[in-house]
Amino acid sequence: MIQVDYIVVGIGLAGISFCEELKANNKSFMVFDNASQLSSTVAGGLYNPVVLKRFTPVWKCQEQLAQALPMYERLERELNVKLDYKLPVYRKFASLEEQNDWFTASDKPILSQYLSTEIVKNTNPSVDAPFGFGEVLETGRIDVKTLVEAYKSQLQENNQLIDSVFNYEELMIEEGGVRYQDIKAKQIVFAEGFGIKHNPFFNHLPLNPAKGELLIIHAPQLKIDYVLKAGAFLIPLGEDRYIVGATYEWKDLTNQPSETAKEELSEKLKKIINCPFTVVNQVAGVRPTVKDRRPLVGRHSEYSNIYVLNGLGTRGVMIGPYVASQLYNFIENNIPLETEIDIKRFQ
Ligand SMILES: Cc1cc2nc3c(=O)[nH]c(=O)nc-3n(C[C@H](O)[C@H](O)[C@H](O)COP(=O)(O)OP(=O)(O)OC[C@H]3O[C@@H](n4cnc5c(N)ncnc54)[C@H](O)[C@@H]3O)c2cc1C
Image (cartoon, rainbow, N blue to C red; front, side, top):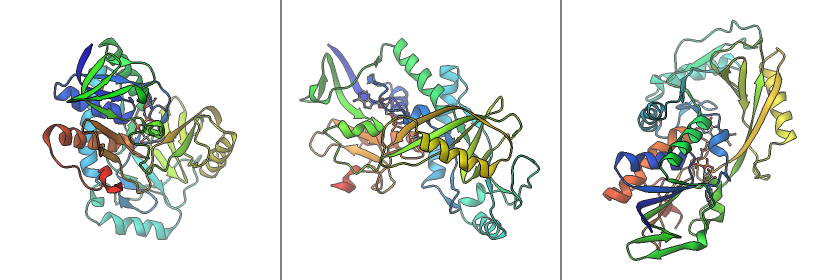
């Protein structure tokens, strides 16, 4: 029998963020993952504190960035991989009116530190932007695929990863903890993303899952070294390759890339750039988005050793570390969860 403090189910951005809390606090743990959900591995990985449709701050953006960026920096050192690519985000203006809205927003509390007040003029012949761009500060891209792969390898080396499906019906609830096959743990944390739909303890929670797809394109004439937001996102990867995304689809909830999404993104791209490009790859995953757009964090209503960390939605890079820390402090230090993220709001 193996005895640990925690079992963690799922090693996407939620599971990784929680395991980092466990490591920092010297807790022992075992992780299960069967690579059935791809949301983290396909994610564009952007972190950006501003909602670019409305020029409003992202919920708790300062707190989220303060928690998230040091975690990725630490993981770069520990895993010996490059994860954090600091890149400005340029929001294309569609009109003079939008420029004015940007200036009004840049005067507001919180936003003033993130919205540059200088309009960036377009000098790139492959991009059509007569009204220029607004630059968002303190933004970048986390290479989430590399993170997940490197994190899993490290867990494997430490014999902490079980590369298989977690079968919920085999979970036994015992005095002072849980047992699963030959593992005894004091607590179990479920972080399965959209996989939560199979979890009998938490599948009543109101997820509103959204499939997302991205294209990877090769565009040798494009030559942009910033993230461009103009209808779609364009994220430079180096060597003339760019991520183009993303789509939102609520009916087809498979991980299969679709022809419809490819067409939709290609059409959007043709409105943003006027140079040739070729699609070299296409990926898809299902985002664990929630009806009220807040994460799903908390303790099972009946079983006090069973927890959930889910609902990271469209911004897992920033929000994951923030909510993982809240969950850890709730379990170990009895610090109440923020009511906005606590699953009690659905009881
Ligand atoms: C196309 C696309 C683009 C995105 N772009 C961005 C972006 O630019 N920036 C950003 O911040 N966010 C982005 N997101 C959102 C982000 O990816 C999510 O917020 C985040 O990945 C959710 O992480 P998670 O750990 O909750 O879920 P997941 O990544 O889905 O991880 C859950 C894990 O649990 C495992 N699992 C599930 N059930 C079981 C089981 N029974 N047994 C064992 N293992 C199990 C799965 O295999 C998976 O590895 C994007 C998402 C998509 C789809």
